[in-house]
Length: 379
Ligand code: KG4
Ligand code: ZN
Image 1 (cartoon, helix red, strand yellow):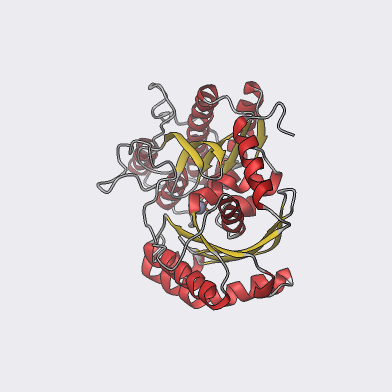
Image 2 (cartoon, helix red, strand yellow):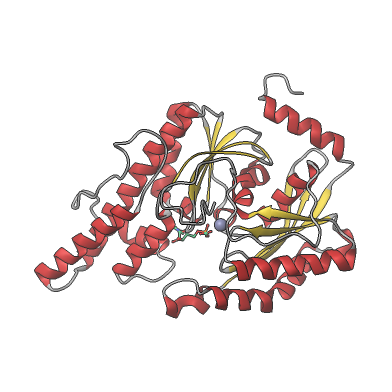
């Protein structure tokens, strides 16, 4: 069955067919940021995924007054909600704990209090039921999502664009991630959120900035396209954010306020710059790693302009473009359950010693980027 397919796919297929004796059903638990999530996912004996339930309890309202996620509030909310979230996932899937083959839980990277609450819940469930437990890197969850949603074979190029992360990953297998480039400062979602904040739009800012941008003129302000003058796939968004801040302040100084049109044009100019940069860097990443497919994940992948630009880049490179449904691009537990199953099939198992990690680079060999902080790469 492997004729004409990449080696990585063959190895994975051999491993999974040797390990699998039927379908597998996993509970996934996610609590690394501000979404409390639980899901039940099944992989059939041919390796196809099915989401039996996926419950996401967002916390946007709890953090709204603070202009960002407050870790302590997030952790408390996870502790209060995880049990009912898991009960709801089981109930919607129409199964009980006896039907499960394992428990997958996000073990990092993320806000440590939140990760710990998910981990303690998973450990308690595993101890009570005797089910195997698999710790999952949250980013692996995002990176493997197109396999769950579209059955995408290895290898492929993944562009992960969220509120906390931005990186290009060559994905060769359930644990085979090579980072080709990443942001050296802000993640694009973070930049969307900051632009929203400085223009008085609600949080999370991405959808609001996109809505304003749709009515604006992207050419009125000429914002920078950071790092396009340098080779490679690394990205930067903080200078762009400062340029928008300056343009806003110039308008405020000149006119004493912003018109609706000003705001729309600022959003359109900013969004166009982000899309230009991500499109060009994706083109380079596909040239460096000419995979048969480009997949995108993370909340910013919801952006319509960005999706259209990436689709064009993929087509030009002869690669298939895969963008999972929006609800599975943002944080959820179905992706954790799926990544847990994939890890389980290649022998991944954890016990009560599994530690929560605030920082956990997917590609442990990648050199930390500038701006990654004193403690090294977060992800
Ligand atoms: O993946 P995600 O749900 O959470 C993590 O960061 O892990 O991503 C959330 C981010 C937020 O920064 C939000 O503003 C951004 O995704 N976002 C968007 C859009 N929808 C959500 N950014 C641009 N355009 C959008 N339509
Ligand atoms: Zn995420």
